[in-house]
Length: 117
Length: 112
Image (cartoon, rainbow over all chains, first blue to last red; front, side):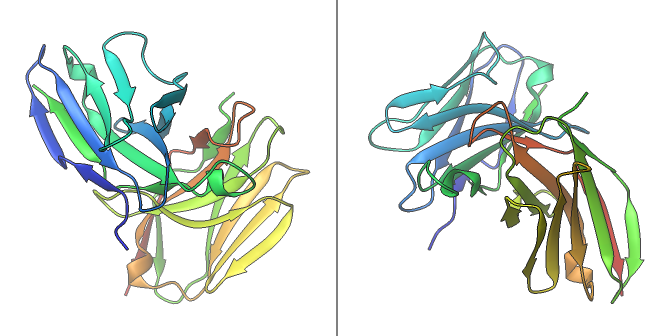
């Protein structure tokens, strides 16, 4: 029973390049959440997606960041024209449904550590 | 005022000790609370979640919520070196049932 999978685990980009982070939810989970963990900071909610829908992107920076969760394939967090301040650990979580307790049961992947040089 | 405040530690205890980890929170709306454990360079692992005031027990772990004082705690009995990790408290926030707000974490070291 594979958990949440993320790749790459480590990503180095130069300023101005694009970063693509991928997340495959746990089997049977159709809800995906992205969080960012900056050094010395707690995890911060970025976006909540269901298949082919962005439900809540209130935590996403207004520019350069986008996310998708297509009908087929993994969820992707895309950062265009990266800057040094984007260096952080990006975690994806998934849950089976959003009702009762299940949405609180978010299971996290190992994260992608992005370094912008 | 931050929604979740957590003592960053670090906290160092001998093996077998009882560990108490604490968080305080503001804003009483939608009160689900979670504890996660995060090993170095790994993703957070859900330990427990609770809704109501009182205690919830799972093995060596007990989560406690005191809504009157807005205080949440995690107790670890018979602590083991393998419990050495950062412990994160979290709660739902923003009036939603999915958007989690995390504390910054408490680094725990259990010495053999």
